[in-house]
Amino acid sequence: MAAHFITLGALKWGPPVRHDATVLGQMIAVAAFPLLFLLAFGTRSPLRGGIIAGAVGVVALLAVLLHS
Image (cartoon, rainbow, N blue to C red):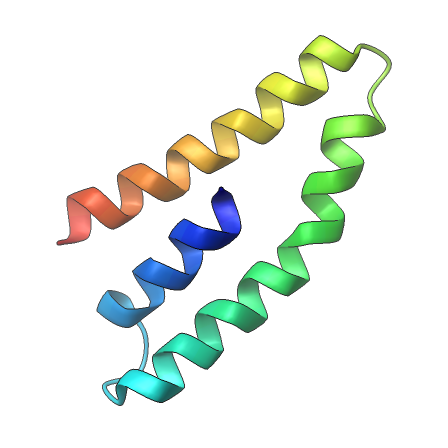
């Protein structure tokens, strides 16, 4: 979910060329995936990890919605 909204948001706040912005968003999403995976499943409590990963997705959604 976070990767999807990062890719969508890159079109609005990334480089002015649409293709470059999409590529930038995909690169950020791929780079953030291992970190989100570790946060979601590497914490001591599975519930806490799920909440953290979900919160990152919600923040990405809000960034897309507020910037449009």
